[in-house]
Image (tube, rainbow, N blue to C red):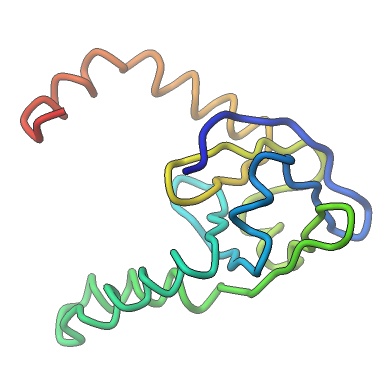
Length: 143
């Protein structure tokens, strides 16, 4: 499970240092893709494959199912940790998430969310201001 948040700088060539405690789950290989809310999703390969199986079971006749599947798979790229624990984020994904220098890597249960720091701060501020409203809505789901 991934939890916590870490701030790292993106290197000039597009490499990003992955926090040490995230590395064991990403050691074999991982997949990075366009995420939601303006971030990137970084999945361990095993979790990515499980997600692909769920996506493949969606009805292709449903427009939203096709769109969501395309969002995740069209922009996906397999990445590997180098010897010092960095991944290379493809340019098109950096552009999508507006990542230029300062980043936040945030553990989100089965994946890591990668954010531009300014976008992350704005997003966090917004959801924190609505935390009680969000909690009440989730109460209906048993949380």
